[in-house]
Length: 391
Image (cartoon, rainbow, N blue to C red; front, side):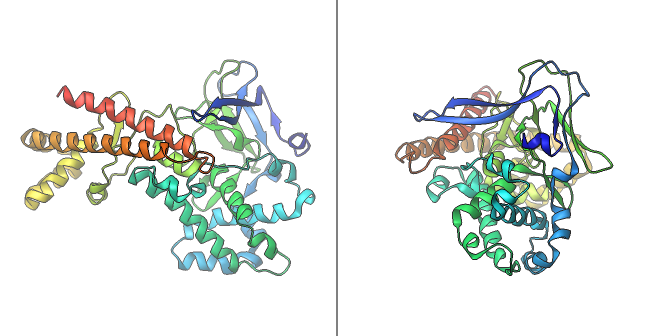
């Protein structure tokens, strides 16, 4: 009813709840948007008018008097890119305070109370993750802490009462709402699109997002979609399962692979212009070529910096012949390094599984999704090990 009253229009899709066993004796509720009828490619499935959208740019203009000092503080901390998210955070808190007087009351009241992302993790959760995933999750928790501190710079008079500012549960809820339900439109602009925020993530999405000249948001079918099929969008940011767990709190079981978890070659990754999204172990056992490149680059750096520079020059200039000659010459060292890393990581994952099994899932309700994440990574590493053993 609220959605219809504010001008939101659905065409051929419904909001549906599903329930899944979490593997620990509980059930997980998940709301998603599915096709209620066959949908042709290019057809609009959801229209959300500009007036219903929470836009960080509009909020910053609307609340400039209240936000200016806080924005300056974030800029001083080197967090200028996080200002749009902070503006949404403040706006959600302000609308929460208005209660039933808020035009967003019914939408806010429909949102989850429990989140499984990094900001919601406890320290016991971090203890059950490999370093890469733990680092990403801790970054989300740290961002929440910075936002909570920066809230003190938001002008107090008549805006966000002390009771709200000191309520940790409300603050974390508001942060998790904006962190998991907003998306980057362009540099410096983030939006939350009510109802559109119920689209789940898909590595190969069925739905695309567009904005018309009036600022309305329209979701279109990217392909022909049969009735009953889930409608998904691609969430912003890295699509690695560990990154999605930390940022959004779920496991993407359709992801093709996972970061190889080689935290000891981060400097080499940066020097070669690579990120975790490039260095993948695939679920079918394949290894991204960039993994071999980065491992060899690291090996050369430890043995002969001059050779490392030659490899770097070949890599950056696209000289595949020279690069391949290096790989041929040092293949045994590269292969051994990757094998040792895979074996050690599998041992670490087993130890993490044991550690998680010793914790109380009632006290630590995020353990089921962490377990699923670790299981996904474990299976990918087993597949890679099988592939390596055939080399």
